[in-house]
Image (cartoon, rainbow, N blue to C red; front, side, top):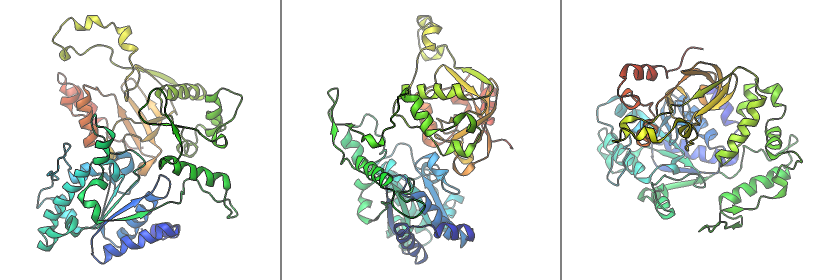
Amino acid sequence: MHLLHENLFSSLNPEQLSIYQRVIHAVTEKKGGLFFLYGPGGTGKTFLYNTILAKLRSERLIVIAVASLGIASLLLPSGRTAHSRFVIPLELMENSTCGIKQKTHLAALIQEARLIIWDEAPMTQRFAFKALDKTLRDILGAKDDANRLKLFGGMPILLGGDFRQILPVVTKGKRQEVVHACINRSDLWKHCELHTLSRIMRVNEYTADGHVDARKHEFNKWVLNVGEGKVPALCKDCEDEPTWIQIPDEFIIKSDRPPIEAIVDTIFPNFINKQENEDYLHERAILTPRNDDADEINKNMFKKLQGAKMTFKSSDEICKGSTDNIDQHCSYPVEFLNKLNFSGVPPHKLKLKLGQPIMLLRNLSPSTGMCNGTRLIITDFNKFVLQARIITGSHVGKMVIIPRIVLTSTEKMALCNATNTIPSAAMLCDDDKQKSRAIVEIGRPISP
């Protein structure tokens, strides 16, 4: 751990070093405090978290690392989702508290901890932080009554994230309601010490000889301006707010070939010969806001993949328990059901090949690295399960099994995602508990 810290510490830039020293000072002096690390993606927030974790844990100090998202928690050593670690209620109100009881193992862990790091904090509703504040005052106050009057019970809290990205989800909420749900609208924000990272490390602006790459510098600057709303935008199709921007020509791939082929060959050069190279695959991705575009890109690359192919089909009948009309299923022929596509749900026919990169869309088992957003390589499959190897996050190389699951309703799956658990046997299939129990067990990782 000491060697890891030395390697990470030596790579900190001046901005990161200043924040590192401030947080470490707050921990060693036991002064507490609320810190917020603000910076766009690629500025090294996670790198800084890991440096602080390595420093404190090398000194045998306990640090609790959490994130608002399961996939983000995998980037932190021993990371967990905030809701699962602090038992934050799903339905939050201003007077909510976390479900941590005194004299439990979790309460004892919190009392021994010296720092809490919470990544992607802007995505969490502001009442969650207030609930944590009340809970820490109560738990740490049992050890010292003076802590009941201190912010977060005197525990240093390092939050981080980017307000340019996704904010808390408010069901059917308007923009004003979403903004009002953010942490910077909380009473706690006035006690927050704000630190900013501005240098983007993901797209390195410097050449091998140490000179600034003008093109990369301009690209980073343009991305920041887009996030801050400084790029002029236009309204289309009677939109209430302008959402369309003009992309500069120098950032557009120019080719006489079809657009999909051009972007695939640019992002994945020599894909046919390198498709078995996991480092080559996990450091590249094509992002698109439309499912139709993603499907077309996947079809194009699927044809180039080598390996055995299998087609998986979803259930194609209506659940008879979901309607009072016993003849309801007769109104929906199988052909009609098979053509339906839903957001967040795979199509009726899912074609996969051995060696194909895939991404999970559900939080199956965050503790073993199976989260929404985890990328894997298929190594084997049959009609019921996929065997795959994780290629991203802190569980790289681990072999896991992905089961077939039954999506009974939006509410139940939303509950599973929020609590980062796989659906229970009762949720999956009420009339066949034994079968469903086997499906839950098979979701655990297997030995390589």
